[in-house]
Length: 172
Image (cartoon, rainbow, N blue to C red; front, side):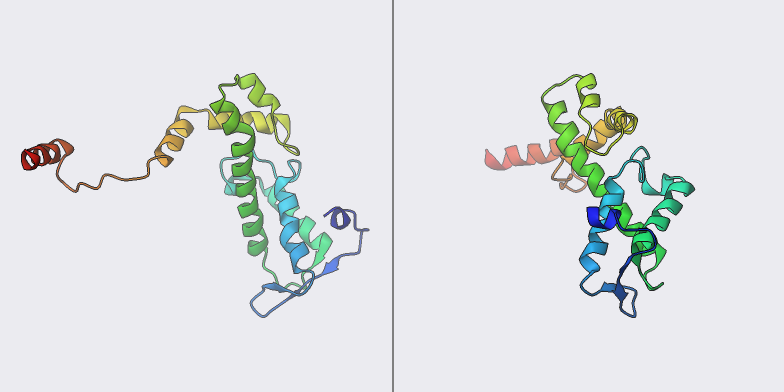
């Protein structure tokens, strides 16, 4: 990816697309990987928003400006496709960062100060602190515990006490 970021101004990689706006050709893998570097670069795509749609207009315009500077898409690939790809990769990066740099330390019982210092590469300290504080809120902790429930209530409209009583009467 360094070769793409270090392209001389005015030069770009030509990517062909089919009639549906889907990139095709030998340069497609480079185009597919490049938005990931955008999503992981904190100065371009900050992580301190709850959702992708809450990013400032300036950030979104900057992302749309970077991709055409590096790739000639011949106006066949829609801006919304670029946005959705970067958004997906940003969400994945936040998720893996949470797993690698936050959850393990929380499970070990580390203090919050250590969590603040354990930020992933490319993520600014203030943005990481915002994420750690957000993930530590009671609402976020409750959401995590709800995710751990594997089976929903499957007894129908009969309560567990009534089911237990029926079970006891059948077995004895």
